[in-house]
Image (cartoon, rainbow, N blue to C red; front, side):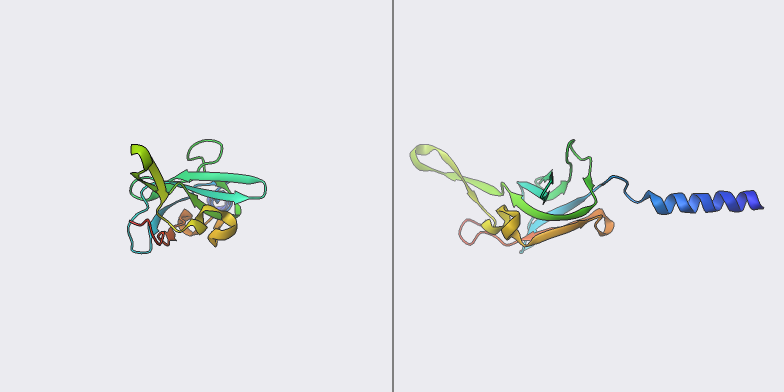
Length: 137
């Protein structure tokens, strides 16, 4: 009986310490205020000494990686920015140009107003962006 109790306690302690280890998996979805997914870009999670990123997929989803793709992110509080959210438009002389389709405040962590504490509930951090006042959709 004591052997089973010891094993049970050991298992319980192990599970409570497991958490997300050194790095936590973090994923989410980036949408516009109208609910449409943001189809392109990069989500950046930044501290003064570290940066991790997740590439936005056409359906708006992303998974964070730091040194290697999708390897997670260390625990902590991050400033969040979203870059590369653009669409291609005809430019001068037949050349294409890219214009932002979300409000430009999201380009910089100092102005985005977005923060995330890791581990996040359910290891998810969804982001809703205001569209660019001129270039969206």
